[in-house]
Image 1 (spheres, helix red, strand yellow):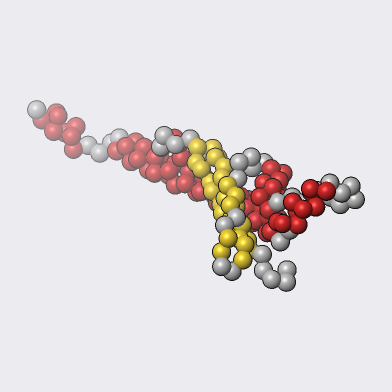
Image 2 (cartoon, one colour):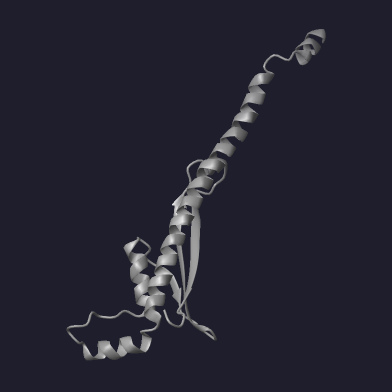
Length: 149
C-alpha cells in the first residue's frame, strides 16, 4: 500500500499531460488566426466584386426603358445595351461568381440595385477541432441611380 501512495505523490510525467492540453489550445488559436484571416480576405474580395457589380448595374438603371426600345430596332451601329440585372450578372460572371442574387426594387428616392454574392471556402485548421470543412462567405452591395449622374 505504501508503494502506491508513493507513486501517487510523484509528479513525474505531468509535463506530458500539460503539453498535450496546451498543444490543443495552441493549434486552436493558430487555426483561428489562419482561417480567420483567410475568411476576411475572401470577404474583402467578395465585397469588391459585389460593389463593382452594383455600380455596373446602377450605371444601366437610367437606361431601363431606353434599352428595350433600342434593342427592339437592333441598330447595328449601337452596342447592345444591357439591363441593370444583366450588367451586374455579367460583372459577377467575369470574377467567377455564377449565381449572384440581384434585385432592383423601386424606392421613393429612385431605383436601387442590390447585389448579394456568396462563395464557399475551405478551412485549413479549424476542421481539425470541429466538423466544418467549408464556410460560406457572403457580401452585399447597394447602388442607387442619383439625379445628374
